[in-house]
Amino acid sequence: MKMTLPEVSGDIAFVTGAASGKRFATGFGLALSKELVSRGASVIMTDINEDGCKKAAAEINEKAGKNAVIAVKADTTCFEDQVAAYELGKETFGRVDYFFANAGIGEHHWIPLFDPTTSSSRPITKPNMTTLDVTLNGQLNTASLAFQVFERQEPNTRTGFRGKLVITSSIIGIWPCKGLPMYSTAKAGVVSFMRTMAGYYGDKAITVNLIAPNITATSVVPPRFLALFDDDYVCPLELVIEQMISVLGSCKDNGRAICISGKETWDHTQHDAMFEKNRVQFEKMEYEFGKWMGLWE
Image (cartoon, rainbow, N blue to C red; front, side, top):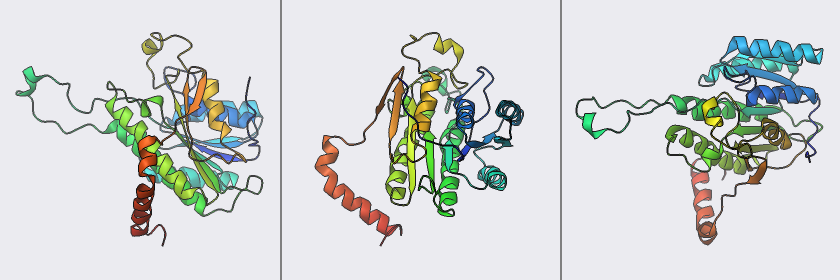
């Protein structure tokens, strides 16, 4: 049974990675943009693939019968690109209620494969951080833009929130995959980031949540991999988008890491027995560090 989703009609979203990939007609960003427009929202669609983004936007606007979206080229690793996209969106729609830090790429080999038989004949190589640049730092760029935008705008009169940030992680950020070390690192990094930011911004009319789906048919996943798994293990794209939208509107949820595998969803909790044992001293440490950094007095 489908869940009842929050009202988003009239709201404005900023979505990174909003164009379709080369192997699939729809990734998370494009599917999300379509669904938001179908629910009455407007979308600033950004992607490094300018042609694909413009084509997708034109199709959405034609179906909607109005200019419900704009397409802007933006490389998420370039903060200035994202700021420029926001400024154009603000000029067009007036404000931004939701930022989706969604853009990401798959694994790139960060160092040469382990082979002691040839290592002495090879130079020590600088690591390739491309995956982290896009899938971690690019999302942090989106988040930093979102928080500064929210700080500068009044709460939405309908929802009462200055804004909401939703981050796309992965189940691999929860269950590390030794075959994807950089992707695992990036996706785990945004889980911890989400929790710290949700704690800091939670009393400021801002929410921060995260979606961590298992393998889904998007441009990040090679088709030959999908064929290896049972249908009940692969996430339906519609379910992922539903969970993204579930934390919008007047929803008060904050700090959630929503995991999805197949058709099952659950919240990944951060606390365990050892945390509870150390909670008092940890929270004291957290307070003192925050005081030292000037976050509070």
